[in-house]
Length: 192
Image (cartoon, rainbow, N blue to C red; front, side, top):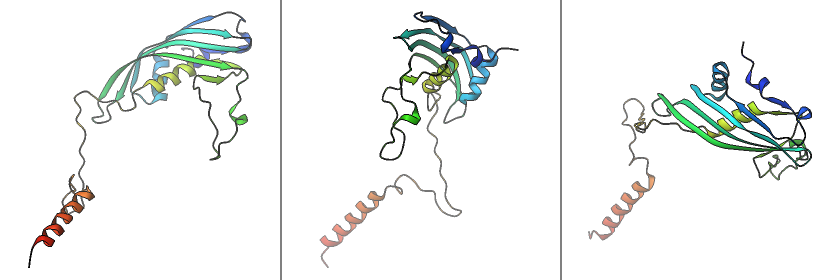
């Protein structure tokens, strides 16, 4: 049985060699790609590769720089047919030992948690999970609304029984006001 991607790509910070840049090359097998596709809600993933380095920054922080490549198959938002997209993106993360954890961040006026401005910074925990970084980067890179090139926008028309469906003119309220104004102007100009 294949080793789960998460187990194979979890690096314990205490065991990382100090002052040494580590290279990594993660190419998930078919079972791992299937699990990732299910987690991401896509039809399939092929040619997934996550290659890069994890280098020390100062005494306790780490910087990850990697290239993510994948071929993803998603459903077209119009036709629901498969759409294939190629993803090639640069990934950067900085794992900071002194970064305030979410519980330590000050609440904003709307009682929400203030998020850091730099989305490449993360608090350094006990483990740097390269698989989590891979999946997160892939999720952020997938097209939000995949669409086949020849897919026409869908038109949906509905109406209660016995009524005509609304058309574009009927849903433009100011068009009706303009017609009313024209009628009023014509009535005022008409001598009786």
